[in-house]
Image (tube, rainbow, N blue to C red; front, side, top):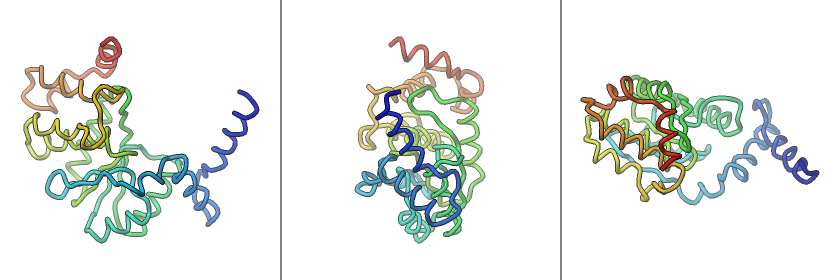
Length: 217
């Protein structure tokens, strides 16, 4: 790595506290989220909507938005970015605790075929968390779109054609990008003889095979 590259890496690492123990840690985490996690763009557009009764989707919510979500009555948040000592998770965890919102985490992929166990864990959360709930990823476009589609099919009993609308340009999801693997996942379910999405997921879904076909397309 070149000296400028090393300096940039050290600067980025310096903005990644592994815990929020004091005000300085919080400021570092906030700077990371604002500038390196594209938080400044999310301040302009939340990509937020209620897609089913008591179920919302959006991009990553910062502390002021979590306060407003609490005022809206949101009781649970499911982040699809996973849990761990990342600035965005630490800040969200702190804000949710402050406002009495239960935070749940699943690590769901968008630029590669999602793991079966991650989707099954997500469905289990859908069934047990308190509502109203918010589901989010980073931008609210791809992972949140797939999660919303699955929620509609599994929890609401919605048909696939309605669920597909959750992955669309309306939410800044584009099939021709690397995240098109999520559309192909739904295509595979549509082409199967499975009676429902969960049966297909458990019986037929193979993330590695899906990814290989997507890369050959």
